[in-house]
Length: 219
Image (tube, rainbow, N blue to C red; front, side, top):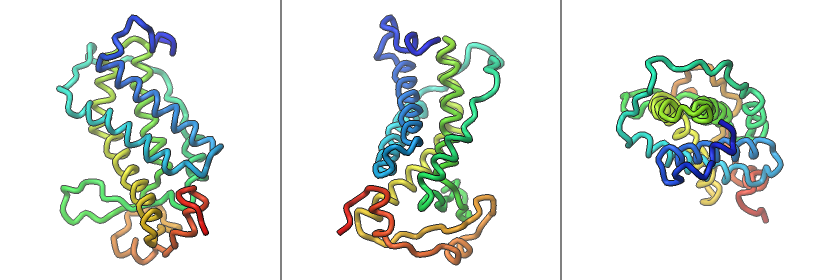
């Protein structure tokens, strides 16, 4: 199914599937443009907006009754599109604030935070969304919705939520003129304890990041 077919006039624009597909496609297009780095000053607030809007689609999928695919086995889509370039572009664009700490499951007691990267999160979310979009464009609407719903619960929902928390925290630190903790040089492959995170985190003042990230003018 081509992009023209995706937005064909014979599809009900108010249908659940069309609305979810539109939000998914809009997110992929938007973050891909941000990753080009043409407007680095607005990258962080724009990503905050886009991830927030995507999670609205995720919330709708999560609240929807269980979607059952038409076929027992998922049709083969061929090799997944490579997202390494997207990941690397975001890593360069967000270098000062790419790494953050996150607790994966807030209901698991005494779970130590781990180091994550916004660039990894965005690339992983795009991978999941593209997979479902390939089904949608091939005319397998139910399969697409099933995949988006399943992967929302199993991966991209929590991943996007963690990235949103990091982006919102960054913007809040800057707007409120509060010091910002930078996870400087942390290895995201390590299982770090909370004490280790605190020990390795360096202090970076808001003024050092606000200007380059375009969050407010520096005097």
